Image (cartoon, rainbow, N blue to C red; front, side, top):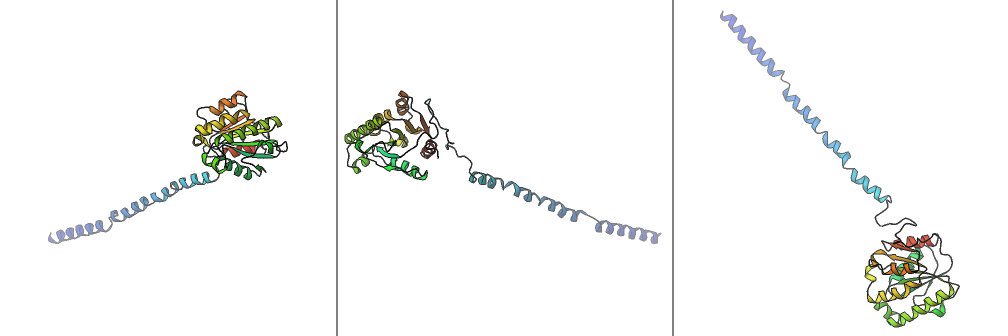
Length: 242
């Protein structure tokens, strides 16, 4: 009997040891952890999305405020026709602000030759220049630099525009200074010059009170009202058929 009991105890001990040696739990945990570490690899593809969006923007997507050729606000006035200008160009300032320099740079970019005459007199305007581009904006500093006072500039402008009307010159009236180029001095030159316009190009932010729109509307002048100074170049390109 004692021998039988001893054998039974030995068998139980062997079964216990076998159970401990075959327990799979410790090796199962690393397998599960390995599966969890795969998640960051999936996240890598998601972090590439912003880079793709940046690339699309750099590829030349149209930015807010840009205008396509022939697309701009008219405020109910006739639209400017393409290739409506042909011939030699004279450029002058009305009020002697620096805004005229911006337009001259735009003409250079478009490879349009022009006669630079910021203070051109009526006697110098001839039929050999069928196009006169006038950039309107009053500047006390600019007038002083040109050796003119307000009244002298007004007299020059009136004489010049009367001569242009007599010659049948096409007058492109531009106000590209926006709200910063409004005020008593600039408004004086706007009221003097804009009634002579054959075409009008105006920065919208400078005509919130519709001063220029109302003047242009008196003669139903084809016009372009744009959001950015750079858009003036787009309109000029359209007008010269570039």
